[in-house]
Image (cartoon, rainbow, N blue to C red; front, side, top):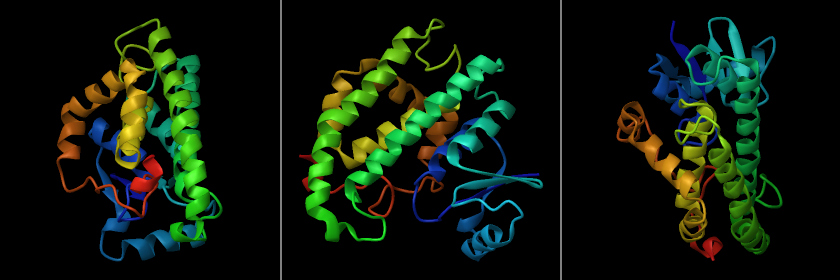
Length: 236
């Protein structure tokens, strides 16, 4: 049976990390909310599931429902050779993914530093201050950590974990893509100090299944409703 992915139909958001893993794995899946009446189906699932997910994305595999991006990727990684088989390697990959989740949350908070219930226009002054700190301190700090992991990976090969691609590599690719959209000037400067991260980003983009996906209508364009939003004034 095909996996069922539940996420909002008009944004990449956190669901995109799951889509990339499914696409790279060549897995059969249905992006449910992009189907006719799909959003209503998704909301009913959240209302009536015995173990309801807090928010999309969530994945349904038969009778199993998994919420939270990192947990979904932990589940898929073990089934589709997108994580090491040994427990220590699997845990390390999961740890990297959780750090990526922190990075994504900080990127989101640049344009919504006060509340997700307020429009960007209602918190622009605070967003300017938050974005300045994010550009100058947080982007370089996170990228330096990933650069260090790549340099210290004893297996080499340009991956975060082991010799083969993992879901953490795919997720780091997506973060860099999002940052290049939202903060192109700041991110290009930071990538100049993180050549291994830049090389990984380019290598993932060239993978046949990823490239086919990026070139397809299944890849939703970045826009100003998602996590990564381009407001030129925030790029400094």
